[in-house]
Image 1 (cartoon, rainbow, N blue to C red):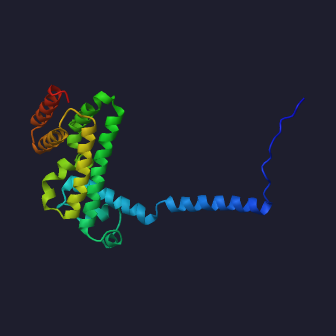
Image 2: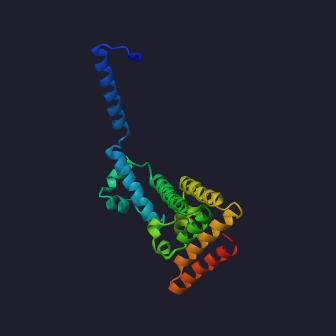
Image 3: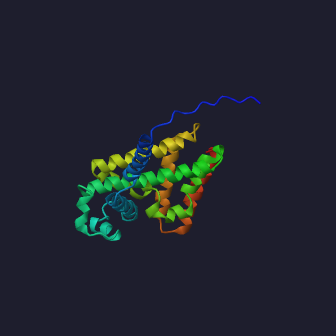
Length: 217
């Protein structure tokens, strides 16, 4: 029986092998420590998340730093360890709220067949639970009327996310005007939330959905 020739790997000295094992372990441990968020980072994220909900619920002008810090179980004095100013917090809150809206629409589109993605996004956006879910819903509808009076950094953050929504809609509606689609969606939601007549609110949403259906959107 013939034997196949097997090339053996060169044998490293034991000390070198131990060092390589140690270095690999040390590098992986260091990387894990570097990627794990610090306690301050976790707290910062909690504050921003609370602010993103509060602004949608109460508006920019109705959102106080003391109330947000209390909501996350911290004192007002700890605020400046995380933010240079109230405007800095509001800018991050605007960015977070917008990012959540984009992420929600992206998930809805991804879960639908390609030809139904836009329709699915529109129906979810104009659904009754979105009308009721102000503090976790679309910040464009909740805060759009206040935006002109906000600091430049707040408007800049919100505008960036609004552009992302428009781009997302455009990706799934090559034959439609994404600007008109988004404007109609947001305007309908604003009115549906504004009125104190449940039947009128439902009629507004139904009329917009019928319009989109008639245009093949």
